Length: 429
Image (cartoon, rainbow, N blue to C red; front, top):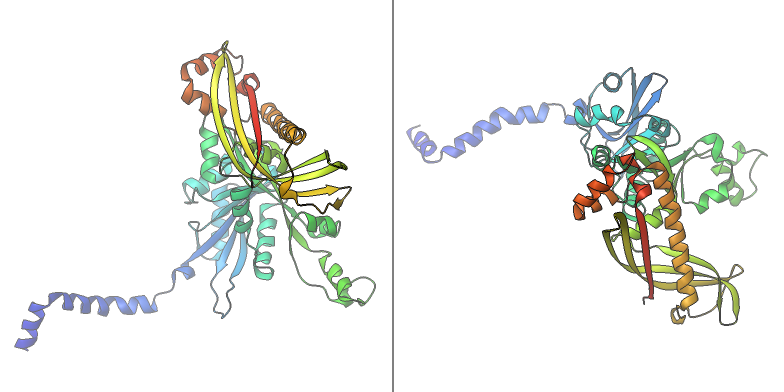
């Protein structure tokens, strides 16, 4: 006994370790897992039905299996306020709601008819919805989109955050996170861009299957056997495949985005609009440009497709005669990738085709036209998502403030700024 006491005095940390193991190991082994007390939320959906709010949570449900899959479920709650709806969802689920893993926040497009910040304020401020969550809207209810997403993950393996992540890196002009929304909302521009994902419900998706495949449709829904199709049993695998597409809900990613001002939708941008804005984006270079009716050698009315391989952008703000001018100088390095004449590909070594003056003029004209169309949308919406205000305020603060004070409506400054887009086209590769 005396030797044991001396040994403990010599190595006291061993005694501490033994005490920890004795008291805490049983608790760790037999206590319920965190997932039994708290639901892991992957996405949040917010809808407003008349005067009630419906909050939907795409939750991860841990299951024991030997496959690399996960089981998801959509749980909803309804209340007269967002907080009541969240509490109702927790009661339905029988667990606390944990939003720290939520990667996507979805609202219905109708929610954007009023200031949407009032609806998401509780989730971000009280319920700890992370600000890096991607903020998007959809044409159907947010709940329906989350249900379709859950089925996608089970049947196709495609996740909503994969679609959004691709858009954020390759399509959208700016960051579309909740943090970026708040930055624009509370900033002097009062404007921001959020993503738009179209959800085609069952009764709609039976129309235009071929067009869906052209636009990159992710399909979900139950399979149909040949006996379930109209007209009896299918005669071929091809007919079975066509039949199985009918009646399926689809998530359609057209690469569109919504422009918000003061939390309300003021415009929608298509892919061409976003591509024109991405001219100003140094991180986005792999765009394609198609010009039509070009004359090369012995071929008339040829269509040519170019790939933007690199670009250099220089933007500056200047004042001339007290008029603010937003100057954009862009040098594009483009590479010809394809030549078509009347829908037929021309067998030609396109890498040796010169970019002559006609081609350069047509490329410049197309890009400037698209940019002018997009700029008109932003001007009509008084939505500065380009960063005009920030650029002038940082570089010509005194003159810009004087310019703003001279306007009848300071929010209308975009319509009083002159834009100069100078494009230089050169071959690359």
